Image (cartoon, rainbow, N blue to C red; front, side, top):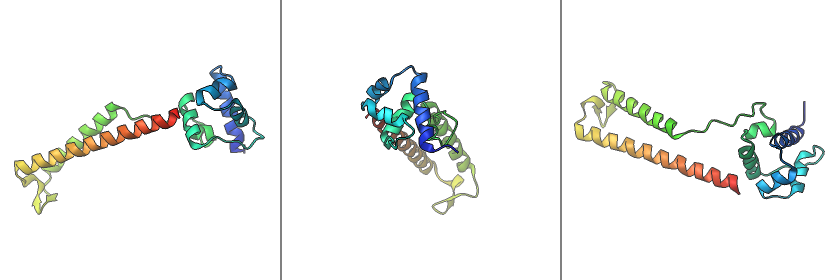
Length: 152
């Protein structure tokens, strides 16, 4: 079985050459020295990039970190959740909430949820909207943070 460092070395070199880049080109994109790239590509060396640089490499080559590290032979990056998938999640949650309101066995504040008055149901719907908005903002902040990490 191949050493993980050797696999990393081979994959970085292969991906770089596939793009038609020199070691200098890749180094410039990462804002590091050419010798650092050369060190990664030399399987006999023990040089290895830090976590942030691994993420940058993953983004630059559009492959998964697991592929770079030799933990997977599938270079595909993990799927990115899009606004559409968030919208789909919202629809699914709203459908689940409507089904919950029709339930005769689910209780809220000691009453079957289907017997709650309209004002309480509207409050519950408003809380659901706030939760969904919170989750959307949290995902946006995480995406911004990941993109900043990938650019440094």
